Image (cartoon, rainbow, N blue to C red; front, side):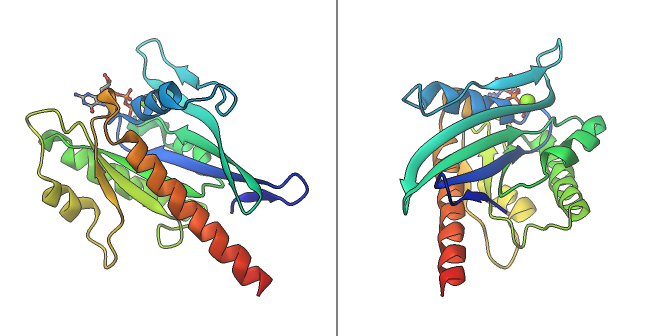
Length: 203
Ligand SMILES: Nc1nc2c(ncn2[C@@H]2O[C@H](COP(=O)(O)OP(=O)(O)O)[C@@H](O)[C@H]2O)c(=O)[nH]1
Ligand SMILES: [Mg+2]
């Protein structure tokens, strides 16, 4: 699915941060934007927010990374609006997605919302004839700094109980903890997939 431009030797990869409202998706992008070192390697963080500071459409952050096999890689990071009513928007943002970061809110009272949002992700992918069986994804258990949080085992049981478990990271996005671990992992998974696909095509 990734866009590969053989002429300019550019690889373009779309990563969507998905999860319930207020779980910390926008905060992840803000922290990434703050910490990506070179001004040339990152674009502007574009946020479309409502007056109450909630994501209305999506947040968008482009970053460029070191080339693999002579390719310059452009990562496009998107978030979705978490509020239940914005499902059409979420579906739209998922179009052409290469990788997903599912951000869960670790607070006990958010477990139903986490589960609903995960089910909603699968449903919306289905509408694009896609599925998590073929799209690399990682989990981020955010807000680990709060006191009313579920243990990691519980979150794994809820969101990571498939035959093959995916990487899951504890995070406190507000303090920037776990943000880059999460991003690095999904980026690595996507690049590995790209390399595997191109070497298969060349064989
Ligand atoms: N305590 C705590 N609050 C967080 C954390 N990450 C984000 N938040 C707060 O949660 C609220 C919602 O975050 P936001 O990124 O806008 O959520 P989004 O709806 O998923 O985009 C904001 O007030 C953030 O500052 C975290 O790790 N711990
Ligand atoms: Mg947001």
